[in-house]
Length: 387
Image (cartoon, rainbow, N blue to C red; front, side, top):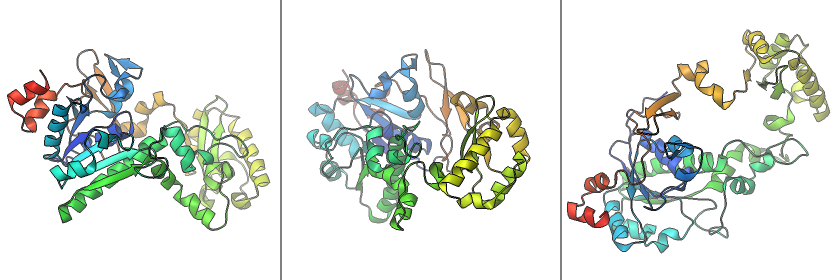
């Protein structure tokens, strides 16, 4: 859990992003106390709103990553709305956008224009391939980004096709979390220099950075690839095994003491040579372990292995997470009221901590007038923007 509380209280963020990377990023910042305003097209808003499943007209994924924010409906293609946004920039700290490179310039909202209105503004641009280079205008999604980052090529079994990961690695780890790091660093830097910055966050590069350790091995002459490395399938003592009742156990007994403890618990004679054995030796060991784990249901193994410190855990399915003793004790899950038609919304806190007072994800344009008042617009000016 966290003691950060409202560390970003007083920081104003204008969020132009859509879908997953930007909204997840700004949710983390909102959890830390920042005032996040989702600036959305009045016709469709954030596209994530429309992706099923949903309840009460609010999409599940949208509900999951947009707590603690306010929604302002503004059509930035209209001159009056664009001018209003520029006025807001004068009082803001951070602008987040995830358009393709060049779109902000077409809207008349490029970094130079924003910085001219507010030299302290921090603009975070999240894109698939970066703001420059031969792919700057290229379309893509998470799977494309991790493909070019080399991450997808490290998944799956040796000699087989790469496997699609179960979560969006480039969107969340490659984009949102690196963007959060950069924004926080930029805020610290601005406190020293008084100047803002333009942050160019490439989701491809963010995902590629996760390969740092394997690239280090490559630099030493190794040829890392899928299914052959220590941590992606090459070692028998680091893998996933099926139990008698078709559940799965994650075995991570890498160090000698854990390998000995695991084999002791299994009633198998340990051999330390297996830790660094040849691929053929690993295959033999893996087959032996698979045969042993297949003799009992998962619950039995958890009881047996629980008496030994051997790095084995049950592979949980999504529906089991909220009731698992670890997550209950750590208060990972909490609920907020989504309002009429939506009801309680299950939320997951991030490692930085749960928000102290999270408002539900906003309806499109729900806070338009209140936001404009906060940013200094008069009643007549607001009426002109929102007749």
